[in-house]
Image (cartoon, rainbow, N blue to C red; front, side, top):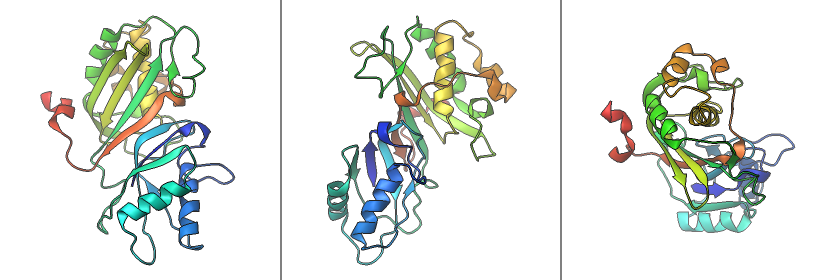
Length: 256
């Protein structure tokens, strides 16, 4: 099932004791539908507290009689709180896994450039009220494309040992109407806080605090201390998960 949620009032996706989580809300609804049986929900990614999703994907094994996909989406949406909505539903083969079957993930990050924090955006964008040169960030982002060890962009606390990933696509544009910078990253997989750390470094480059060609040095260092900044959770969105081969328009790595 593909879903969207407003992460502001959630303590992340993953179930945690005595905390409101996305997984917890879904499993609570499924337990009602199965009259008390626990159904374990797997997510394509474990978004943190305050992080949003437009294209999170989950799977679960529903016990008992098969419920058609159209009825499942109606049933779950009728039981969801206002900050969760299911958008698509399909019955998949036994060998499908929402995380391991993914070919790539797309995260989007939005940064407001307003001088003061907009009260209507404060939970849905990051905030950076300093001078920025978008072109500097666009040039720097080219050095992220390809297969690299992203250790320098992984926060402590992650469980993954192998930190080599392939970055397929990075796009940075200014949304003039909203006065925001929009960052898009498509990668084979993301490490803990990786997108927020990348955005933090790119903002420093855009502001002139870092040189445009700093990413090769940072990547080679394999040291988290090289990038201290981590952008706020509020601007991050899990935008899409790819289960088929990525379209060529999102494969900037093929041009290397």
